[in-house]
Length: 153
Image 1: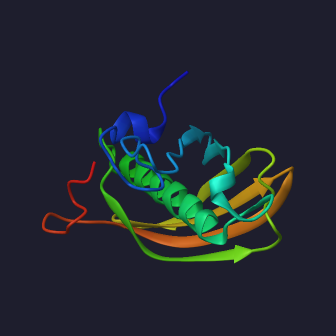
Image 2: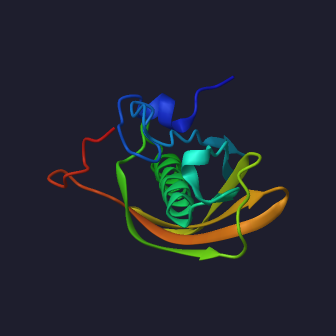
């Protein structure tokens, strides 16, 4: 199996949501699948808001990081670059549509809605048990030298 985007391009990243180097983080693993970026992630009891249901803040972190990597991948492909630019979240909106059960994996799916040379708007869903439980719309921007996140991966 191919390494995830995070493992391939940012193996030393310690981000809580997507950093492979953070043993206490969520450690999502995003993979390109056609024109989407996908991730399957298994919640644990410590991620629950109440018994059997995923915490809304964890849902936000999952979608934020997954969408950020979708934007970074897209901007890299668009520029014909060998590595993705360091991107940060400029804005994102999460809609919690129904409680998200933790008794099985959740699936994240993200795609580019629009982009320019240094930014991408991403739309995503979080599904559990075959039902959309949350949606995300976000704007992610490639940062320049001097920004604190510039060398994070």
